[in-house]
Image 1 (tube, rainbow, N blue to C red):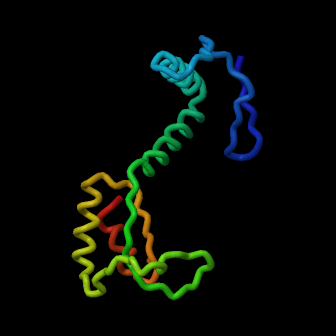
Image 2 (image 1 turned 90 degrees about the horizontal axis):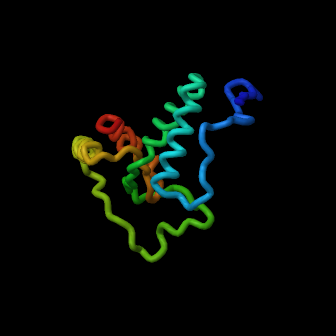
Amino acid sequence: MRSLNRQQEGTITLSSYDFPEKLSDKPRNESTARQVARCLNTLLKSNPNLAQRYAKAKQTIRAFRKPAFYEIETKCNLKCEGCYYFEGGDTWKIDPNRENADWRLFFEQEAQRGVSMAYFVGAEPALSQDRLCTPSMGMN
């Protein structure tokens, strides 16, 4: 028996579903993973809308698989409470004269390395708008 309840637009909750086999209560192992995969496949085959949403969720998750953190600015015009960036004086020195072409090449190499999500950290990355736009030219 299976039933899907539509609570609000775009949201589906599964109230009950009888799978062909009961999942074991044992610690997760290869056979348990296979059981879960079989149950999931059964559920997705019987609910095309759910299958589309599941595929979209997997695609989103994959985007976060290989993150990288980039410090592109060492200046800051803010004084955020609790910020420790400038404590100790151990900050990276970034060449302010570095050309956008150099940044573009760097981010193209990062894309080839398989980076899927870029995080910009440091002082205040938004002070360097041109550097923030450069990765979009080399990374997807």
